[in-house]
Length: 262
Image (cartoon, rainbow, N blue to C red; front, side, top):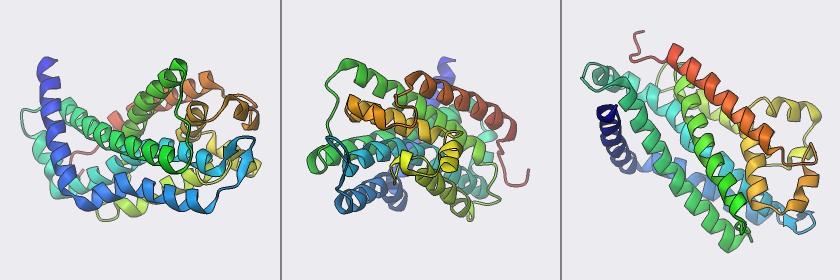
């Protein structure tokens, strides 16, 4: 087990180096959510509830969406690319355990996710009046949301990586899924202002619950009355994320492809 972990950490450090060298990936994964934050946050400044502006609401949604960008989208695109290049097939032929490869991916996702969080919270605080939590229970909730949300997004990205037929077309398959879920899950619009069928559809997927959890962390208690259930539903958020983590793990184990010829 120690060997698996040590190799996974070494692989993760290598993944981080490779990620930093790919400027396009860095900009798209880390900077793009910040760019969206400045666009939407600057255009829509209306108050949507007492003491809460849309820009504050949007920051909370983008922080949740950032976990999906770093985990699901990035992993689901990069693995098909590596599969086409034969990278992971060659790794499969080395003594490195398969688990170490996935640990390495998780470390790289954690790295890019932390960069996003720092940038989004800093910009939100400086330019969009985002109130950072002052209670320890909010920070504790933020911690398990980040850890569980990142793990869930990453494992779902691994599972979804089996769907694109090639690395060239992976972005065209994965990106629309993320964009649609962002619209449906209350990232770009106030969730309760969406049609009922959209709300019910979004509630199937984890991004809706992540955005709701981040609103609990960063918005005042009074905003709970604006939620669909008139409460934060933290237990339900935890349950849905755990279910998706289990489902994603099952499908990742069953469908993951080490080479494009399988």
